[in-house]
Image (cartoon, rainbow, N blue to C red; front, side):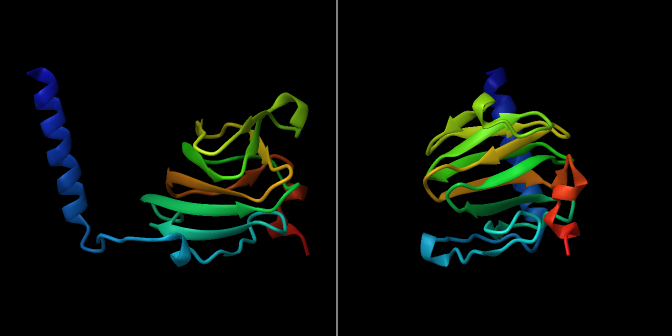
Length: 155
């Protein structure tokens, strides 16, 4: 009985939150609707598409990222919890402030990576293009451990 009451309360609260934002609407996206573009926050080669929300605001958002083969995102952190799902290909995942692919783990299609706020990590691809989906709550950023590796600061 108690579990039913908790579930009902969660449904009511989530419905109220959804109804409170008049900009929320149902959307159906197919892979053909996903138009990737270069993303200056990542080293050259990565592309992204914002699926939902606004990462610069205090709201839930979803973004898809496409990484080419043999690609590395240097060690970085994020100011909020991040949930990453591998949709195609495979992605290496390592923890720490320096890239060492021998200490990481390869995550295949369907794998999930959940990272707490301010947790240093890095990712890479090997022989194939990889698409991931990131879900988080903003405001969000990618903060490179070594500021010299931040492509937004390179001329």
